[in-house]
Length: 316
Image (cartoon, one colour):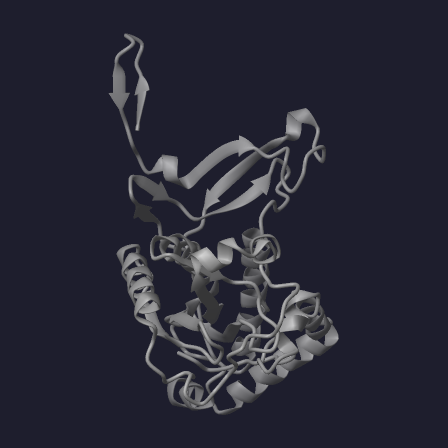
């Protein structure tokens, strides 16, 4: 990075302060006309939960995005604020049980499912290109058969694509733990390690972007829509969620809690608190309702566990 000095000559300068905060036009987020001119500025603030990475000649800095008056302009800031509030209350609750901790965080493991289809066939289907799913035509002549399932050999073209995606992810610090076939023909899944939610969400978005880019290089199209084809499984993104202390104690793993904290009652109390919060604040309805709009209901409608299931687990 460089600027020009008083003498007109370029001055090369790069310091850490440039990474911490940025300013841009926020008048069009989420759409235009919402802010008056003198408060139309928006600011990016470094998110230390998600690692900085470099791709090609560009440094990517995960940030939270807020307006002039501190209003959230992205989906990350509400997540960070919610986690901060959750952590404060969880620390208070644990303290009442004699457990001291610096904080509590939410962890997730995102299982990303998708279809890989020949790009020339994709180019002949305007519905797939515009809607992400087929809207007319006959069912696939090939269904979900025992000779074509999770454990079957991966198509060589698809395998080459998945290998390149995995390598590209590793180069920017995203370790893909698994890659395998899924139930439907042409369907696959990749999943990273279980980790802190803000960073895992950022990394999942990058994985999706790289899948689309690299698939095109291999003559394939990557479909993330929840239900691209009728009659066979749709694609989901299972969100394996749990809470842990900053010291690494998984609060939704009864054995781990008992071994590390010596108090088996902590697991039962934390689980009861989560169930009570979901019931009292309508979170169950929001989660279920958010997934049953159109595409999510299509996925659940054909033999794939999805928004109809609310799962909390001790993965990791």
